[in-house]
Length: 391
Image 1 (spheres, helix red, strand yellow):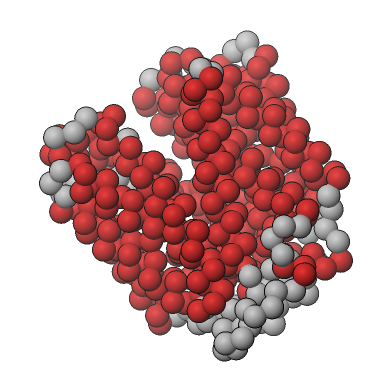
Image 2 (tube, one colour; image 1 turned 90 degrees about the vertical axis):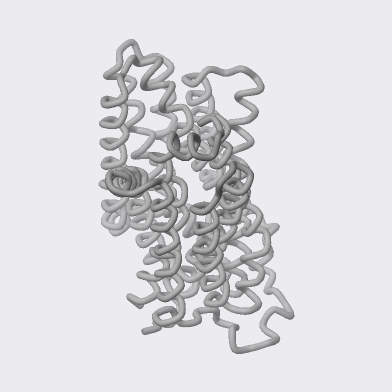
């Protein structure tokens, strides 16, 4: 069992590492490629577009051919694309490399969740996904620090060589440590018929899809507006901004690692409702805050709310799918990436400022999620039997 947990964590970590590690080198990359920093910020969108593109087909392939081939391919693509970014001499090639990096990371991301669905029972999976969320929260803090230390002695290209090495490490793990987990991998006809409870168009899956997508929209909106909110609205300097981001990441980690213990005491639905109530309270606090201290309290509630509920909601969303966990993971990933991007784009079109953008998504999403959680509960076949343990 430990091998699957270790490999899943490694597969997931490629995604945030590809986002956060290179940011410290952005001014140097812009200078060497003859582009503005603003132009190279498109690299973030290119990366997410690559992830969404690969998620469209990665899950279905993983359900037909197995998890291991997709993990191996995704890791190799991520590594080769990182090399392409490192040798780029103009911005178009660099952005192409970033898109392909996203393709590799997206495939690995989908497979990681499918592996956990294959190998863990519902309760244990909820605990592991909560811990995975905590580890993911470490990356936005550690990756820029690691990038900064690398650039003290080496040029920015070394950041992408480091990512390439990470991709190759995941490739080696996928070949030597990871074993196939798909329950029908050895049965060529396993995908011929889909059980009724594994149809994607059912109200329970759609409800959890919406809950996870809206929760991701909240946290990504916060990340997107945090520089403006903290430095322009609240008047913090760059050092204070970095400190606040590090402390909120620590809050997320602490809550994520505490959630498995909370699951021993409370029902999963209770934790998911708690998550949304914290979002709603954060929105109210930010809307009425008269001091920076109250606004910081609201920001803390956002991080705690996401950490306490997201892993549990993801676990429930994957619960009904024994044979189609790859497709379900793909649909979840695409919805989360595209839904968040759509909200941020719409808010910019409407002309909402950073604070109102965050308040709007907190209050609107939390109220809708609370309604969904109250109205749509798991039925008997959504509480799947534990998978047989694999060593």
